[in-house]
Every structure is written in structure tokens, then in C-alpha cells.
Image (cartoon, rainbow, N blue to C red):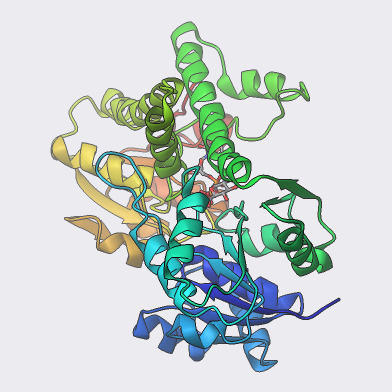
Length: 432
Ligand code: UGA
């Protein structure tokens, strides 16, 4: 294996996992970030994000001097054979992705090219961004140093990102030249993974299309769940039956509160926006979004059905993160649920094993608790929002004695309804 010099621009979620894992497979990596506080943390081996398994790898590779952190792109690009752009592409009010950071980085890369370099776009971007980045680099590349633009979308899931990086289903590289293809193949060689080589635009589309397809699957099963409720069927059984067909597959058919996080909602919007911009209104995506938003409202209606009047009642929210094994609360269903309940005058107590700190800045007037039992004490109803494994292992008998009324509305169909009912809880799930 050839050890390569790599620069990763952006120490957010994607950049940090990419940089650390590329060092882990033997490359020499410099990660760049312009936030001095973040750099200070990282240089001490501390994590600005919660991601299982990342911290020990970061420490190990920093100690082995394969991984370091710097503030300026110039420091990372001195000997770099490949530079990854992994800066944020946040959503704007109209749903489009804000590509300002990408443009700034493209300019700086152009000004710091010293040798042939592969410039790989790792951030999730709309189709045709690669073209714009290439044009920008050409404009600022005064010394006309050769480079190749590559699209290399990431498919990491929060919570299992390290595992996903080191054992990917596929690596997609969109290239224009054989030279760039060889560099990328060499770089990922140690992973022995399936590599799909495409043109740049197809690679960009693979990312948006994959996330939007998975979101569609979730909204589809949630819509089926609504029909199940109306006719007295069980969505869990329907999903099981559908998933046994290998053409459909069992994954991403878990009904409940719907999808959240910083990827699916924003990518869905951005894909819809760009489809219209290039001349096709991909209207299905609007329905996917609407169904997803309705699931939050429907969940709150279930709480209302159970309690009749929500005003003045205390609701214990179990889970704040948008899914388990992450502290990420961006676009989390919990945030919408809290707002909807508060609008009806509910008092909210909430517990999450890791996301409480991050949630604190996004929510107001919520009593944040140190344990599930503390949150349940005195509550009229438990609203299970995130399926954290520890919720399965709780001492539910004890919790029941602490509650005002033993009611559970399970937004993730996570608990066993029969067991909860045997324990004396009034239990309501989603789609059954
Ligand atoms: C997602 C994709 O799965 C990754 O492949 C992709 O790289 C990433 O976005 C990204 O674009 O960066 P992530 O957002 O970490 O990863 O989370 P997922 O595990 O995919 O879950 C997304 C949401 O869907 C969660 O809120 C989860 O609760 C919900 N979900 C998932 C369901 O409601 N039902 C399901 O059956 C599956």
C-alpha cells in the first residue's frame, strides 16, 4: 500500500470521520478547521462531536503522528496528493443548499496548489457543484498547476460512522480522468471495498437520490401505518411481510415518528429544489416531506387522545436525539413534539442519555432530567421519542409507581405492547 499525503478541509462530522479513518488505514492526514476552539480540543484528543469509536481512533492516529490538525488550508496542502472538501452545506430558507463555504474553500485550494492534486468533494452537494468548483479553482489557479475534480460522496450514518467508513457497502467516485481514478483507487485500496466509478454528476446524484429514496421508504411505511390504524391492522407485521421480499428489503421500514437529523430532511429539500432548478418538479419528494411532518402531529394527537386535555399535564419525553447512539438533535422529531405539546400548554420533562446538553440550546422551558425515572416521576404520560436501548432495560414496575398515570405513547414502536400492558400501562404505538 502506498502511504499518501491527504488534506481534509472541515472538521465537522464528515471531515473528522474521514480524516481519522484515512489515517487509520495508513495515510498521512492533516485536517483543517478555522474554528480555533475546535482545533484546541482536537489537538488535546478531545471530541467536538459524540460518535462511538471515533475518539480512540483519533487519539491512536494522532499519537502515531499520522493525523494532525491545522488552521489554514496552506498548511495542509504543502505535500497533499488529495484534498477533501468536507465543509458544511447548510439549508437556506428556500430549501436550497448554501454553498458559500464550498466556494471559499475552492478558492483557497486554488491559491495553494503546488503539485498535481485530486480535489475530492465529500460534502453532500447538489448535482453540478463539481463543475462550479472546477471553474472556481481554474479561475484562481494563477500558476496553472494541474488538478482533477472528483465527487466522492459519503454514506456514513451517525452513530456507526467509523464502522461504515472502514467497511463500506460501496465507495462512489465520480471522475473525469483516469489519473484521478487511479489516485482515488489507491487511496481507498486498503479497504478492499466495492468501488463504483462514474462521471462526476452521476456520483453527485447518487448521494441525493440515495438519501431521498431512503426517506421515501420511511414515509411510505408511515403512510401504510396510518391505514393500519384506521382498519385495525399492525404496521410491524405489514413491514415484516413486505421486507421479506428481497426486492423491497427489510431496512428503513420502521414506522414511527419519522426521519430527522441533519441529512435526510435537508437533502430531501435540496434535491427537490435542484430538480426544479434543472427543469423537473420531483413532486413525490414534497409528499415524502409532508407525511414525515404529519407523523409528529399524529403522535401528539395520540397523546391528546390518551389524556383528553393536554393543558397543565406533565409529559415525560424519553429521548431527544434524532436517533439512538448520537447526541445530534438537529431536525430531531423531539424538537417538533416539544413545540407542539408546549403550544397546547403541556409541561415537559425530558431525558436523553447523551443529547441533553446539545438540546438545551434548542428548547425552552423544558425540565431536563438526569435519568428516565426522574423524568417519569409525577408525569401524566411518557412519550417515547428515541429508541435508546436503555429504555428497554428500565425498571418499568418502579417507573409505574412514580407516575401520576401509567400511560405510554411509543413513537418508535420500541417497547413490547403486551409486556407493558401486563405491567399495567396504558400503551399506544404507531400504526397499530
Ligand atoms: C443518513 C444515511 O443513512 C447515510 O447513508 C448518509 O450518509 C447520511 O444520512 C448523510 O447523508 O450524511 P443518518 O442521518 O445518520 O444517515 O441516519 P439514519 O440512520 O439513516 O436515520 C435517519 C432518520 O431516519 C432517523 O431519524 C431515524 O430515526 C429515521 N428512520 C430510519 C426511521 O424513522 N425509520 C427507519 O426505518 C429508519
